[in-house]
Image (tube, rainbow, N blue to C red; front, top):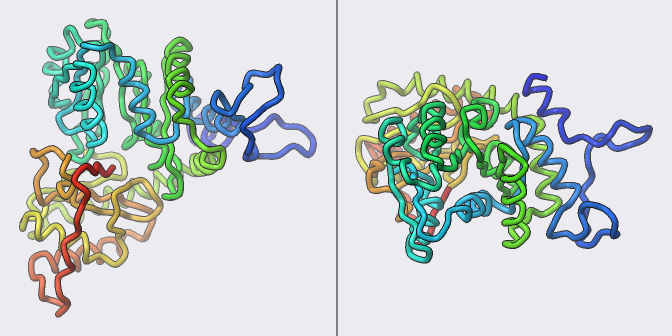
Length: 372
């Protein structure tokens, strides 16, 4: 079936007279003995429905987690003490923080690469235990050749994992490119309404899926039943949400490509994320982020509402990310309203006093924070 049909129908209860169309929320920690669930840390029917649907879209066995970081942690836990990980230089800050911690506590070596250079990734993969890729990267929007990297990882005998949060399984299916594991922050486009924190890992085979599920059970990073219910409900509309948001993103990238206030517009040609680099640096970018009326200044993405933030405000962000880079997560509003709002905010960036309003106060960020 087409993915649009899978998103609507996968993970439904069996069709029985007077049976529910959707799997209900199972608020239970304890289950009668004799079945596969046994106890609330090992399973829940609400998780199972979500896992069946997302697994069907990605083409593998899915394990749901309490957060995207829970999912990432479970994958990185497969790396042995003293092991080697290959990772993008522009990875999500939470992933970088976890890799730094593994280097300190378990002597894990990390080889950072530019994922656009498949040959460099292949060279780094020699002797590695895990090749970790984001594509597109967050927030630089660099795109990797997953097929070439998958071949290199297999030749090196390394596990190959892909964070597919930005692309979603509707735009790329990394398991088909040789990935062993796919990770999602289901908080983002999968659930799509900024009301759920969840993660997921999809494994190529049953053995890997069982290993990941064991990490979840032992670590306790389990999703709540209501969160799983809401994430699945959001997943049902992912195809139509993605279609609208991607169309808006493409249009905005084209409209602002030559804007005089911008040094650069980054858009990989697909997806809902656009990164713009403000010519005036950090101060001008902060004025843009705090001057919008439709766009929401927030540290998330993938919701129905359009969101933006200056990424270098996070201390853990890579120093090679421009100070003036703003990541735009494009939502479902009318594209003209989004364009007009961004235009007036950019005017504030180049002339802070143009509307007579004082500049907003600077926003402090906890030093250890790592916003998504």
